[in-house]
Image (tube, rainbow, N blue to C red; front, side):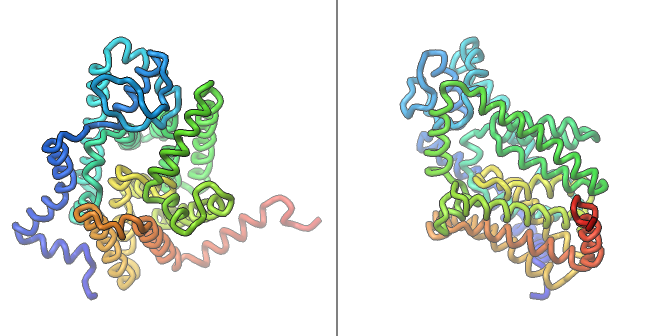
Length: 406
């Protein structure tokens, strides 16, 4: 192939009808899923209803983690968040009622969803073609919109905090606050490692922020109270068994390691370290603007989430496109091939969604392909700097305690 995928798609979309077709393809999953739910009277915003129902359950003396809770007018998903989340919203349900609390959630989730979509599709990025972002958007299941996951306002708050302030602490505060609800939200701290600052300063900020986040998560675990056992069982049954997502947990199950054994945890740690190093290399030598570094960090951080969910893909695919674009001024051959790999990943997801291709759904192809793309991009951009990297490693090892004799 003599032309990269992004340039080829831009050439195709110079035709007005092709451009319109691409835009329709982009929004078809969301629109199609919404229309299907309207026509078949499907349930809406079941993830948020799970929070409302859990809060109502606590107020009425029910266990929020049981399968059948009496929540009039709601059809919630399983509640998998910490008991403290239900406790916080219990007074809200008491004041507003079930319907009022449901409406309040929609007032938070819908603007958050709109902000995330604006960020990944409409916001201008100098080195990220719109066509690449549209294809990534089309590769996400439309039901992600209609389930109303609480992750949308959390992601929106973190993005806004990073864009609106030059200081780090508002972004760190937003991520740590999100970890109160979803501990895995801490992966977004990867953004701190790809900033345009000295490496030592980045590492220090990341470690301090990660320790603060882990302290918050530990506090949540220690104060869960008598519902801790039920919460833990719900996490195991729903998160790890029924809905493992499309990330590392799916890969571990596919190759027979399970998701909680020592081999799986060791493999997960190794993959996460390699991915982090690759992302840092892409940010360091990929000639990306500051705002593109943020998107790169937010997007590729999702690969470190062992339970990669559909709504995480909204950030992942633009991050992958940026990882490919980082090679545009380097190895032309690798750039072209990786650009077509990116397109293949999006098309695979589109086919799995549109035609319910079971073989594609069962394979951890999105995660494996995305990891391969990131690692290859990181290795290619780092290769010309290998001598300098080796010297840095040698200097770091030389100052470690016990590295010198005597």
